[in-house]
Length: 183
Picture 1 (cartoon, rainbow, N blue to C red):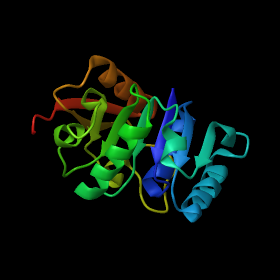
Picture 2 (cartoon, helix red, strand yellow):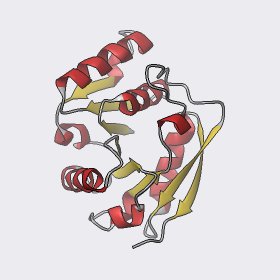
Picture 3 (cartoon, rainbow, N blue to C red):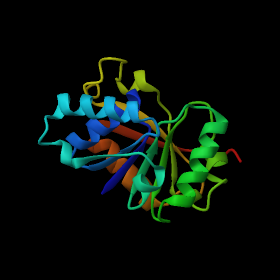
Picture 4 (spheres, rainbow, N blue to C red):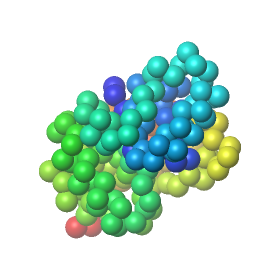
């Protein structure tokens, strides 16, 4: 499975590290070259140079999602940012790509309704601390058997849920799903 991570800040770096350790091929995108450079150095320290070929660093969303099966955005949890990234991902990613967005405040049903792939959208209802990620201490290891909550719009398919479940289980979490009916 090809994973695209949009945003190379602390959460994006941590996700790239955890996903690489779980055996995923990762494309890490950020529009800021300094963020990508920092992520590359961080991942080199954590993984060693031999593991870095499984992570590609790209500067455009289009390049990151071109062949992605799963795309996770790490943009701020603000309505305007989420709408913008969902529109870009929806337009640039293949129709099969599942979109995952961390949000504690926004409805995934509402965000998904702005796409042509509402059935392929999922919200991660967690922040960095709940994932076990601390600034400056992003070792890529989740807390032991940590549970996480994921919300789906009513149209979510069994295939979407299965893919997202498999991803989070492989990176060390116990996912729990619930429907988000707000529209």
